[in-house]
Image (cartoon, rainbow, N blue to C red; front, side):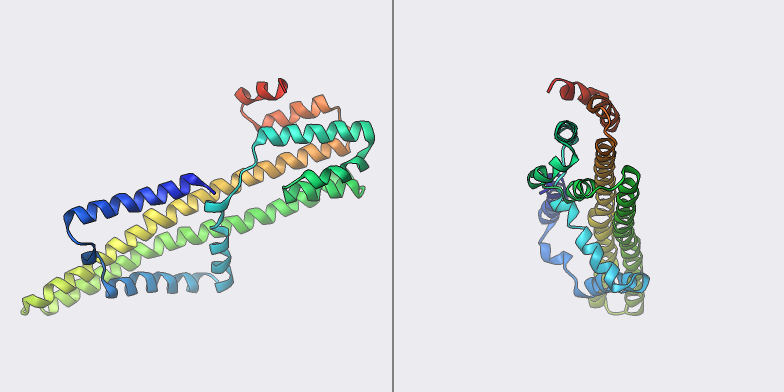
Length: 255
């Protein structure tokens, strides 16, 4: 569970609600026509732009902003070093038993390929292909949220124009000015909330998660290729240190 995402969304909505309640009842910010224009229009535009399957997949990818479990790079390097020493002493087939202790599916797949006798370059090419498609899926998810962030304020502006037209046509009846102005202002408000409190931060977080996941998987490929090549574990360790900040490398040397 990613606490920063939960705390961020909670703080954004919570503080806004506090400010709204301080100025009056919350019900004045609820307007059904505005909701229909912004939410319905945004959803419809998104389906025009993307196939329904892509939109559904984006919702699944969005779970990574809440349920992503990041693998500590330090721990991963230490684990790969243990596998390297084990393979060097007992042979590559010794990794078969070590796979039971591995939780990461990508690392487990790489180990299985090594045990099956894949050549180092073949292993790299196959796993790099998988990384490329992971990047495509994650990139599309972030792109869809960025598109929603563009459509929502646009629909808010359309709702504002609708409300202003309704207001101008009924200026002779003061009782209709308030509801028309509510539609005009609240549609802009809803569009801004969808874009700036939800979709843009989600798109940004998905890009960060994707970059972090690609870094981890690339490190796994480098490590497993070194193990298959029979590279000296000390040289392999120095190669893997390139993936982390210099200030973190001493802690690995001291283990």
